[in-house]
Image (tube, rainbow, N blue to C red; front, side, top):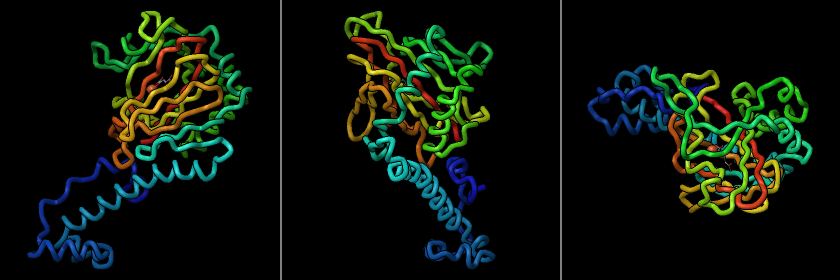
Length: 290
Ligand SMILES: O=C(O)CCC(=O)C(=O)O
Ligand SMILES: [Fe+2]
């Protein structure tokens, strides 16, 4: 597991043995660091167990971090035709300037029309089950692309395959695409505004679901919003960034820490700003992985 499923195991690493049994911890640390845990394992794993476990943990978290970072690096190299721009390096946040064609965006708008209902948040019911709850932080409307009419549409399938290629996760790890609609309001603080205040897409309870916790989001704009409606990353170490709602653009970011994929990364909290002119059709695809 630790070799083949590093990312999944990274924050489930076994507790370190209390101490090395060899008389000199410094010697153990030195030997472990120079590869003796592999080349002289019989001695090392009994006499320097703690030092070997420390080195193994460090390797695992390094490789887990690399897996996520290499996904973003590879997108920049191999998906140049989608116009990727790294708007934050750590945590990685990618803006695609042309992720969807006009035809694809229109297909999603058409599939959602007439089906939108008030958006809900995730909560827990009186028996402790996960459920939808009305929330004050989200006033958009949404629907899901989950019926055959939408799922079998070749344009939809093309986009699902693209999300899978870009995120390097199998389509089975993706949730149904969520189509999100925001009406306009006269000014950002008006009670009729549709918004989604600062939040993370991560849901800790997803650990029990087949596709695992949400590790990535790919968020797509389906139309040009005349004014407002951008997505603001509120907690990036480099400062806030707001992307504009422009047809065909998409943002791709992780919701979890690269070396601890069960732990939310608070730096990618974000919010959907109210639309003050026009309306906003958008879609998000979240991918679970661990
Ligand atoms: O509409 C947006 O700009 C972002 C929406 C969002 O964050 C969400 O639906 O989780
Ligand atoms: Fe979100």
